[in-house]
Length: 538
Image (cartoon, rainbow, N blue to C red; front, top):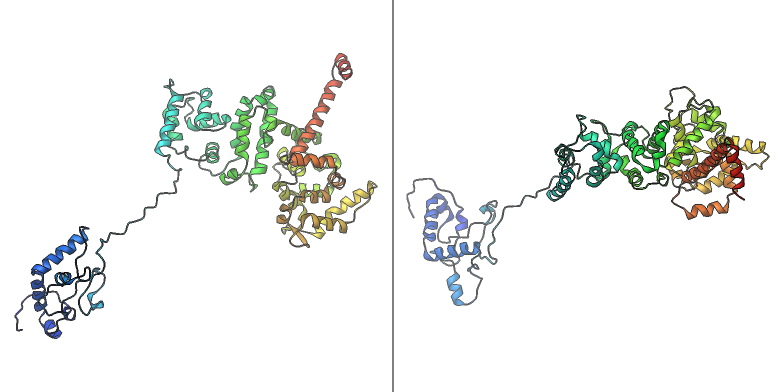
């Protein structure tokens, strides 16, 4: 087979041709022979029909008609690969995947397909939708259209826009916010202080600003906070409380006394930060707002006409008790109290040692700028901690007082230091003293700490009797009341489990204070009024 070949051809593996009569070395020396043989094989009619059959099958037209796919002599004859070579020496088909080298798949004998060919599709790239939006998730088109329809209804006939007194229905019905947020929201949109909010300005802020898709807590947080900060300060709540005082029917009687309106607003803000601002830094975060019950209390205050039924934060009776208690202690009425004033709290219920710890500002730094003096905000934190020792802020407050070395645990010696004064007071009052060893065993049984040699804040938070532990250590009146518990009061507590210790205390004190005020008014009244009051019961 002396053939002359001039030109470049692709080299083929001679062994893959499986030609028994021709030496592989001869084909390698003359690669043009393999090319000519392959071209001749492709020109045969049988090869042409086979290739068409394979192409139709690849397009899904019909099954592959190859050897092994049917039975019978005719099938065998028609499906045998056409070849110019003896039987058993036909070349194999090229590999399906171009990624596999033919040299790695050397086949001996004819190639047989037992499965139909399948189309190989390109791998589908998975599309991950955007899940973080810097300014909030854009509203879906359907929600956006519904909101625009409602907006058009409220702004219909107001081409120039809405004034502040006309804006409350928009706040309530469209934004689903408490009505006393109307002025704050109005000023947030009316940045140039024109006194008018147009439809386009409202749409731009509420819909285009993605406020529509935010949760209620985030909406309130965004409306109240100042630009370029990521927290709420106490002053941020003053606009909504001013509007609450102006519009709420349960607070109308305060409009004639602006000084008490201001004190009420301050007290509500102090109570909010006492319970909600768990970091105690005066910066209320969005996370703290979401984890609190403040939003629910705001909605309750907006729906309830009797503000005293909103026990969380907004009750006027609670403010009245706090303010009157402070006023009783502040004998010179300079709005500051010192140690001697505080020691008289609760009919001298507290020990000198615990009062010293409070004025050392260990549990909380005073906001008062006067050395050795406690301001009104400091007193609010104190009375809330003293009268409801079941709350977490209260437990943290008193734990810091008892933890003398600040190492995060309360030891036997630290508790004994505070109980010594209690024991001395009991002896002075001719009461049977209770030894500290007995008290310590009782405290261990009440708290059941992980380690009996000390108490952690976690131990105290896990016990429902932790408040009584602190009363044992530094509040003699409550200690005695705990030792001689009234079954009637215990039954009352079980009947109203939703009421906190603070709620019960404020209710009792409000009744007492109101009765004292009524008696004072009666004593200062005319003789007719006094006689009428005496004759009324008969």
